[in-house]
Image (cartoon, one colour):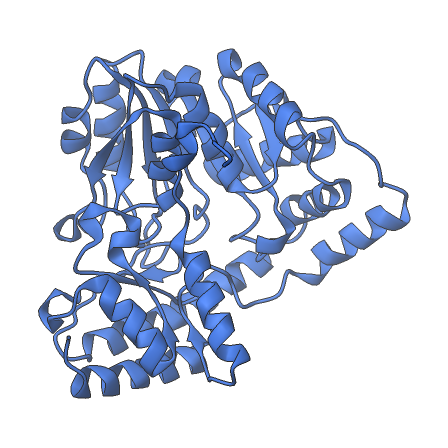
Length: 393
């Protein structure tokens, strides 16, 4: 019998991929499945980005690149951050990685160990807790509450920091809730962190371009007082509809950068060359494609929020960012995961149960409105009929 190290018994997963696999299996059987589970834009990668990758291949960019990423892409990331956030970062602090998860993996490995505590948003992206538990550290959930607009509370977050806290993970705009934390709350968090100089911060800003209703995204990079302990996470997957390209980037404080570089060398060597040149085109090219995609998501957001609030015993506050709705289904009588599973099997609608995002996710389900408006309407009609006819049990 093979014996893996105990840490592998603690590692979890992202259940959205399990739901995707089940949805695909049902579709292969001939079922008509509408997938609102996976967070993947249904829109194609913009043509100029695709052409840049093709040109890179034709130009002979077939070999290894530096583990930290090609300089033109690191420079493009620095320009993008300056354009969007008004913040200067050195290309020498930028690390190119194969997707946003890699930055989480690196940061949590650096600070997670038995005896340490890591704070993370709950409900939140499931890989946070999975990786924390893998390292042997204690995961400490920061409650993300509907009555606070699914923004984090600076006071509550700071109150959870102890002498064992090594890392704080924050995410705005947020997955799975669509919450956007206002600047006043971020100001309060940063001010409070002055009393905890040994706590590092991982700021997951992968949905930073996607806000609605006049909300603005405020990057933690804009706070010089924490730059020496801030890890910034971003990437191309959501902003440029490049999920399958696996392209992310991060900004690291100087004391941590070389450790991150070594992790890259030991794990993935480098990001493939053609994808990196496509990234240069994405960041330096026209940004109207981003604005158009967000405008389309905004239209779908209106459809999904109205439709969810029309369902019996369901309520949904309007998400202010990302492309997820997180409706409250507690009054339906269904447990969230049972409801999600039964909707898929019986109604052909794939959604994710809130508990897959943490202990505070019970009573909620997550829907992605990165699918088409037509499919969203069809899914809502199916959910309406299901909830009108089907009872728990």
